[in-house]
Length: 180
Image (cartoon, rainbow, N blue to C red; front, top):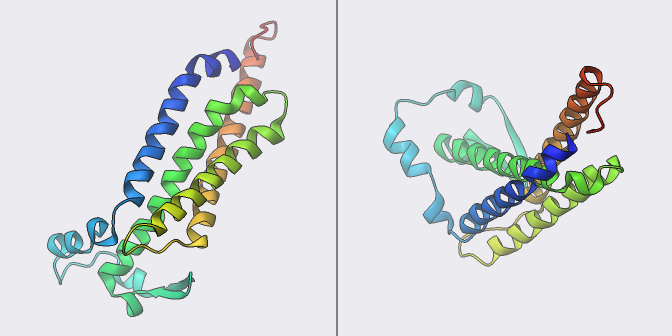
């Protein structure tokens, strides 16, 4: 298992760089360049509002603002949910690839297999928010760094668990093999 991860390591690093490139480009764009509200309004119109009753039934504090359909309007609230899902999802992917890229370096220390990629992803999230703060019409938020960091941690924990289970399965199937 470790040999397979080591052979694919350069590809995982390439994927880390590609995810970071997407994040850098995204945080370089102003809100006006990035907003999906006009797209949602154009394609859903004023009458189609999927999940309106569900979305209208809750709200939550994020940063200094209470987010809800009532406060933001349907399309802006949907966009907010989409943007925060993208934050979590992008850093989930980044955490996955960082974990796989660094896995063999810390094969004897499970704590470092989790901690190092998580801290790298968290540092990249903080840098990304700082970079976003230099872009017009964008607001860097500590809450976004926490959300990003959580996405990365979830991916890293799942990756370590899956690799562990695969190694355990491989050991059962091939008890005399030296590759684990």
